[in-house]
Length: 239
Image 1 (spheres, rainbow, N blue to C red):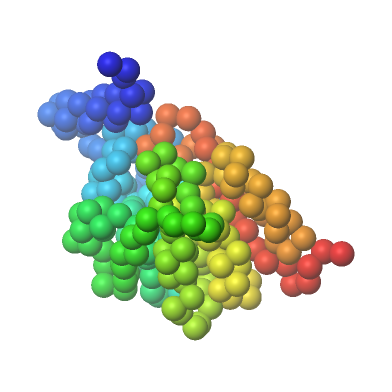
Image 2: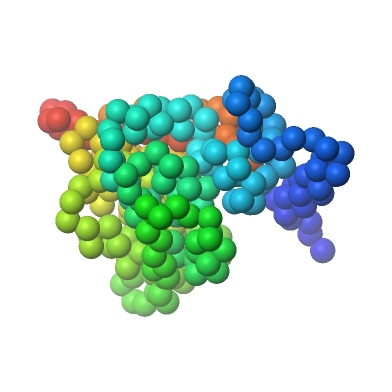
């Protein structure tokens, strides 16, 4: 049987977490923790939303989170929409006026709801079987044969623009144009995991209308650096 490296890593970190707790190691966040200290603690919290929530970190690069936090501090009552729920939903709820989160996985949503603050509205929009002509698909392993059109369309149910839109779920390349359409003037799109070529291609396709800040570095729960892009619409498209 072939060993899944990711599953092995998660299992190892969870075993290490239990051992650390038994030894009396403080694994929750505390005042004065450096970014590196939070990262080290987060390694033992991979795929553990309550543990990541206790650390008060979203699953983006630390630099992206710092920039979004500063942005939200300057926009009291900010409205946020996110594709893909998790620790970021709790983190955003503590810093924004309201958060609308859309999730495709019902079981994941049920486990997350008890952790959400009152200003976070989480809805489940599952994928449907892909039929002839389906174009809103995901390249994520395990998602082949599924149509995410309703999931991507979820943002269209909201008339008012959003100050922050987070793309961190399925069919992300399809979410980007919708995010830009619903973004408030001066707002930010947080596009995570842009190490992946298909996501960079999606950003390049909109290169004439957006400015992109690329962040790369430490990311909670991961032993390697990743990239999160912060995307802003230009006032006028580039010629």
